[in-house]
Image (tube, rainbow, N blue to C red; front, side):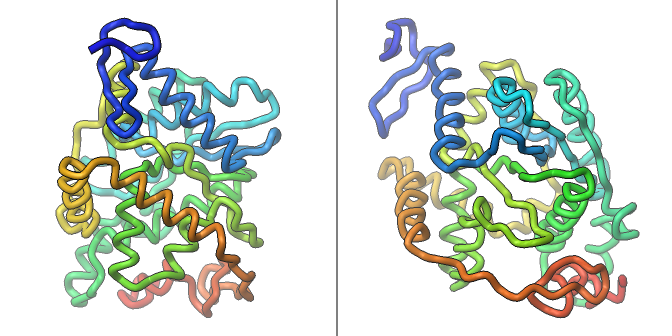
Length: 307
């Protein structure tokens, strides 16, 4: 098969568009898609301080590479990479090292913040205590909530104006289905409105890779010479998301481009919905903004007597 753009040997065929790409044209396609996403959704301003949430995995490193390449044209934009060390055995060490190395390569300041320093406990310690208390929450719930809080707090401290996360097309489609089956419409709408969500104490979160599939990111990393993060989180087996990932991959294999259809449909729906500003309180434990008396992170820890 030949590249539809230049006629060289193709390395990737996008079934939904019927376009084949050679290596160089594929790299241009992915970078162009990210640039189009930034422009279409107005993700960044000319003077933003963009905090890149970097784990060391392929998605976040690809995001850092492409965003840094694009933002070189905007000298007033500042980039800072932040990695959160949850304290998961030896799992996170490799990711931190990879994040540091690629941040140095792209000329981006890299900062690491740990659960231990911020909360006084590692995720492993929290999960062990949750087991003893018979908590209904799985490790991914604790990790996600606590990690997001650190990222928001530390981004504010360094003057960040946007937080860029490496959620891709697959992640977005999975999130939609998961929250539909949970009946959690409010959470689902908020997750898709975070780009424009501006309330005191919360930094808007943006997703430059929203329309790039997981497979395309992996191929981009491979053809760009990015070493993939080989370790797998020991708690991933507890994640409900893995079931939805398998379901969507199997369904798409049989029926075509279902992930982009799901995301496109929901975006059209969400764009017609207006989120009203809610009255924010200050968490009585940490002082962070919350719609309740206690923020979600402190609530989880309070139930374990860890505050």
